[in-house]
Amino acid sequence: MQQLSADYCLPPFSNYKQLNQTGPRIIERAEGVFVFDNKGNRLLDGMAGLWCVNLGYGRDELVEAAAAQMRQLPYYNLFFQSTHPPAMALSQKLAELCPGDLNRAFFTGSGSECNDTVVRMARHYWTSKGHPDKQVIISRHNAYHGSTMAGASLGGMDFMHAQGGLPLPNIEHIDQPYWFGEGQGQDPHSFGLERAAQLEQKILELGEDKVAAFIAEPIQGAGGVIIPPDSYWPEIQRICDKYQILLVADEVICGFGRTGNWFASQTFNINPDLMCLAKGITSGYLPLGAVMVSDEVAQVLIDADTEFAHGFTYSGHPAACAVALKNIELLESEGHVARVGEQLAPYLAEQWAKLAEHPLVGEARSCGFVAALELVANKQTMGRFAKSRQAGVVCRDICIGNGIIMRACGDTMIISPPLVMTIEEIDLMLTLIHRSLDQTASALGVK
View (cartoon, rainbow, N blue to C red):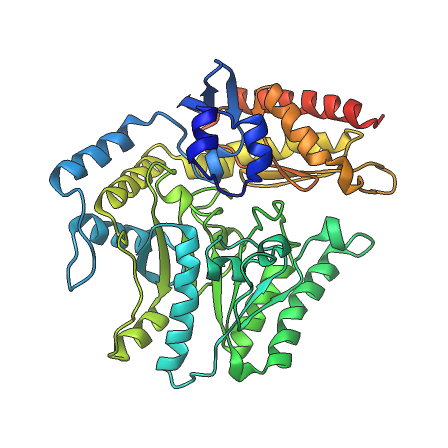
């Protein structure tokens, strides 16, 4: 299998020369919160696949929902004045769940496609209102909004911009609300306000008549699980309201129970005009995304009486929509969102905070069922390791050897486990992480 990968497959985000020298890990099966490789090793999946397997692995109900829909209508599109029952039922259900007046869905195949859609839709909205010069989308440095041309441009990751002539025009970035990495020595409340104020400064610098929208993840995921200070989101909301620019919440990672509410916009009291969903919408069992659109934005698009020239072959794929409906039904009937918010997340937060006592850890933070550890070389000064030490990579590989999947974002170690974990599985995860930290400290010479 490793040779086949080397000969025929080009995986995402890979250094192909390095990967072909070592070979990829071959995952053969999965059950509950565990995956199993071809060597028989059991790995606790602390990342829920790629932030998405909220209901865990092996849910036959989702498999059966896909199979039943495929037998009846395996595929049809939403082009050419057509629709089908699963897409319409899911649209209605999402409108019921989403906060505010986000009552219409534009379906995509992924989070990246959602963010491409946001760029097109926001600009079309303002053009339809008679403001064609409002083209600029403001995002944040170190944000992640996908890896398509528009998604990677909205994202603020320099290593992605270095390839392919990015970012695209009319996309601007402000600083992220990363207190541990960029705000130590400041009061977190003041730091949050200062970072939010950059949005207002950027709007005034560019001209209010040029800015279409601000897009942000409620919690930056791939950037290192950056949880903003409490002061940040209320000020961002105030600025967007003041200057009447669209507020876009990228909930691709945070949606469907990750923060202990259905959506992180509820956790942080955000009132978005557009909201991007994917990943947990089907627990990753089939690809699906959706941009939820507020009543005001949707009405402008409807009243424009012009074609919105945008869409995808698999927009509203019937099998994917059927799986999403069953996934949401199970999240509701089994009470997982409430259980995360009321039981699992508080327990995880209490236990996770204890990891901050480890000599390798500068900060341990969490929100709901997503968490991060900052690895430091010097706990007194919070000094980082030299990049050449690759502390995060060392820790990640040791974690795998101990049977726990964590992700390294630089020297920030992150988790985003399935929402179906038991207290006993949380304890096991923390035991494996603590063991891995001890071994990492030893490997890096930290005492």
